[in-house]
Image 1 (cartoon, one colour):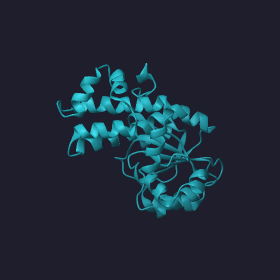
Image 2: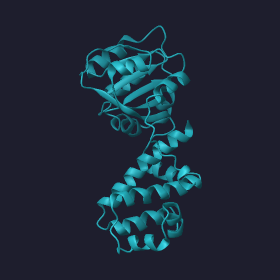
Image 3: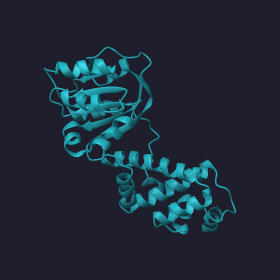
Image 4: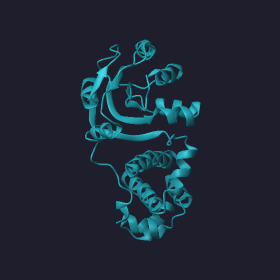
Length: 250
């Protein structure tokens, strides 16, 4: 599970790096900048991409113009090497970008958007707050340990977590009665599209339900037997094209 989550973070970072290269004044020098940041030689990148080192040199020196496909392969090659080295640069970049990782248990994309009804069925859920738009869909999910989130995340990190997932379901696990997660959502400047809580079996704080109603955010209680079963159910809807950066090296 940790490996899959690392790959997901790597994809987030890859998109940032590729965007930086594309939007730079000179994409060719952007390629070189990131290669040097990862402390990777032209020969190492070339070996993974299946080209000669002279091809990499031509792109970095501007003798060839990199297209989207080349940039994507180039960035993935850098991350594949970083994976082999223990994700040292990835860890630094994720911290610099403020990606909160400690409290996140799992984070994935679905094969296709899931309606609230489909999501309720998927997580063995009960809809607690019915006030929502019928157009809301979940394109993925972020599973959070609510205790660790409260104890470890700063305010900006928590806002980043909520704000970066407007079309995703945020799932709070290890929840006692649901009040703390919904208070956090209430005071946040940005709101997630769907909230799921996992933990309460017999009692959900009425204030949590009222806060969800006031925010217009659907609140779902998952009755999945345990967290592992919940993850298994969620993963059954995850896309099959997840990148395994170590396999790129093979």
